[in-house]
Image 1 (tube, rainbow, N blue to C red):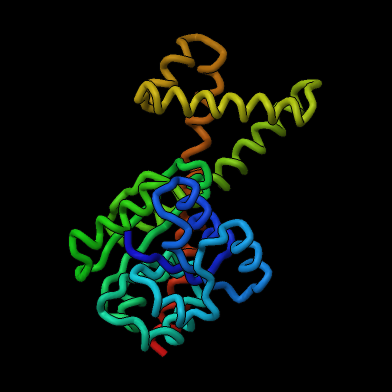
Image 2 (image 1 turned 30 degrees about the vertical axis):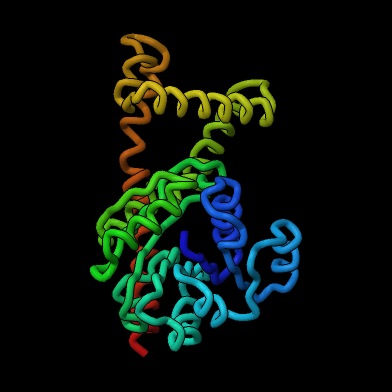
Length: 274
């Protein structure tokens, strides 16, 4: 495994670093990290004494073969401009910044670029990492990055044009699911004498078990509905309500999230053209 550098050690950056090390796919001494927070770097070094800690972003690029950009989308261009002199053709740039397109990145760096949208679920070595490579990334380089993220997730290669909708279904989904089932819990509280904590415990445990059945038995959604919602039964009544009302709700969810994506992407396009 080549040396991998991380620019940024926030929520996603720390999740990726911790996940890769705990997966035993890569050793701490094969990683180097920089973040402007000295305390984060100190804590990181205490946890992993062999990990590399850089003094700035330029050092990350100079000492890494694969450079993972883990900063906020509106900070990506500034970081690339700062380090572009060290971005030689042998470097492989990986961006996890939502809304930053490969075209945006190529306006600064003409070399190997991979775009990845990871998910919080990688904290438990589950979920999907969406990925696409630019035309310069060869098979061997693609495999290196894909294998890196396969250590903490399932890698799904898709066209970049589908990243916005795909992110709703993967990266955004834990938050969306939490919001949905929070309302489910609140309805349970309103219609019973159960406490909120009791309702939440029931729902979380049932979600976990349902997900296990889906995965272990390779079951589809329709099959699950058929197994639980028997004709003339109680569950069927609830399913009827959901079928009537949820399509409009989820259409609105995608409408608003994709509109926000386009808004941010527009800001980034203008920034990268400057």
